[in-house]
Image (cartoon, rainbow, N blue to C red; front, side):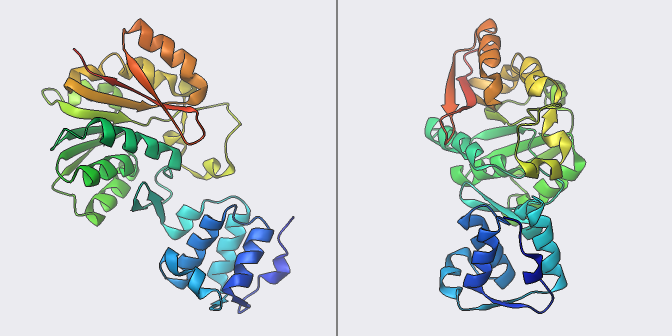
Length: 289
């Protein structure tokens, strides 16, 4: 159903419950959590208090009307609210970075479980983007140090905002560099945990959510559906990893068989991590070299 645009005009007053229903019934936002998030943003209240605010009023202004029109076209809510919850933490997000996906959180759970014995881990995050993975890990481990590398200076500006937000400036280094040169860049440094979430949507691929067209292309699209990252990085990252350290790569589920073959050719004994829909989401192996 198309939204009834006549409902949206300046100074129109809605009860929160009516505003919620209008967004839901017209598919302006897809889920209850997104609608609650938007309402909490508009009312400047905690997400958990939206239920208690159904009788409150929302007065439409030109800014809100513009936002609704953007949302109707599939524009990401996170770019309007400038925030996205990932794992347990709320990160600053804007158009300079990829929006964190919930499925990626399975990497955090797996790493914490597998590396719980490491008290002060040194973590390397390749293609760090907003640094949501790196910062989540450092916050969970309480102590430790991390390096995030990305080839986008704009993305690293967002990562720095998040590092400052969580008071981690003295525990996080951010480097603008080509990850394919990571061994030369970090020569002499070794890490307990190496994680990478590279771009892995094919340049000609069309089966993806609408919001992707608004996200930075370099953070999403890659040659060979991102296989180039696995092909170039999997043979070399062990040089930066401590013996018995862990290396985890998020993968394109459609490339799983191809990546398995590559790992077999490299004699890597890996574990597959599955996402919330039971799709292969990441591969992990212990560095035995």
